[in-house]
Length: 299
Image (cartoon, rainbow, N blue to C red; front, top):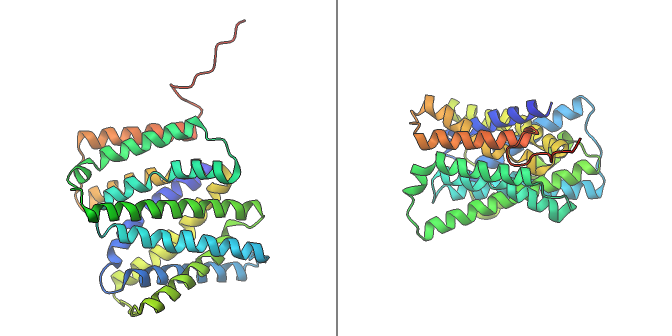
């Protein structure tokens, strides 16, 4: 079940970049993010009401959802969309892959969870693999004030993503199931975005083209309702550090799709990077490791 949820998350989030790219243009970025999570939250909330699976939350549960909505469905996306204005998307993906390490560290700080050497080693392999995959894009990036701003926003977005993971863990420890937690959190996140857009005076335009509407539906239903539910279920079942390894693998899926759609050219360095990412997956999901062997027992 864990493997199914893991690869479902990777496949969905590995293809959402196409839909995000199709949304850029007429509608302001914060407004598009608001549309996405308002729609996703309403759909999920309605489905839970119709199936009578919506849980009642106490005051603490609502505050946990407000925090998750702010971190995971608001600030996280605003930071990453902003970062891509100054640095290449490949560099953003490399920074985001550090979520595995952030989650391991935050789980230690929040819950006292021991940082498993296997997970840290897997994160190091994955990070190194992504650097090789995106090396042409990274090596051409000149250091500048804008570059530092972009890196800063990408790091802040990754931290917000990790904090949202911790809040989801708290929800699930309190007995709040991911579907209910996501429904409330998405609506709270959308409400915060709405308030921010109103204060900033952003126009609530809407692009009625089939391209924009199709992208919005894909991001709201598969990308948000299914993707985040699958991922946060993994957070509860596997722990934040292991679940976050999804963030390393889904850029690889995005590149695979880009090979077909945009003619991405694979290089020897890219293949080496892919191999490192696969080794990281092996370390996360199996007991095999060439680095940690059981000691020999005398007979």
